[in-house]
Image (cartoon, rainbow, N blue to C red):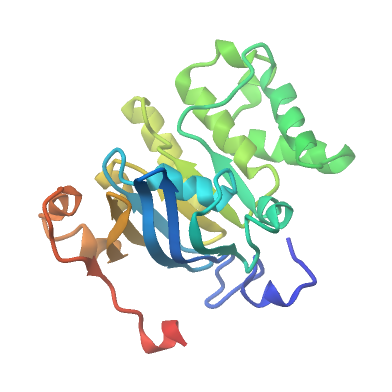
Length: 268
């Protein structure tokens, strides 16, 4: 996907060391619900092609941050952009670049798998051969051929999660947001989903929201940890989660924030 705007210098085309994907940037991003500060002045730069693990306890602000990226929520203050486009003022450009697989699969139980994927693709502006080819591509990638005529409500949770991921890949988006992708799955199903996400690394930017530290260690190149809306840790996965005491970052007591300093190259 490309655009004629000047923002294409950081867009979904090949960037840097052969990596594809969208760039997500937030500056002092803040969201309040009344007096409650759900996202507290977050500065974050997600590079094209990286897989960023967004971690935190329940209520830490992960879901709110994701909803701000998708444009479902508007920020109270601060700025947010995807490839230079604002979810607030340019939502269509953002949605063109975005695939989203929610924690709870949002499916129509009476629709067969193929019909569901066609419906989702059509709602995103896909038509004719483009739609047909995209549906066949994701059904093959997620091994859905055996169930493509089966109603969604008759699928196991594992297959429903596969369909949720498949619809997120329909438009081949440069930014993929995945919220708790293995929640409620058995170990075999978890391994299948993680294998799919592992294969997608480097070919698009992935924002992985998870409670599972082992999942973050396996998939994320960097991790960002939120606590009570604040960004309290940011850095390479093996550094942030590799010291054996990473759970301290989720605790409520005051700790010194552990955020990587940007390199001279990265801050230029």
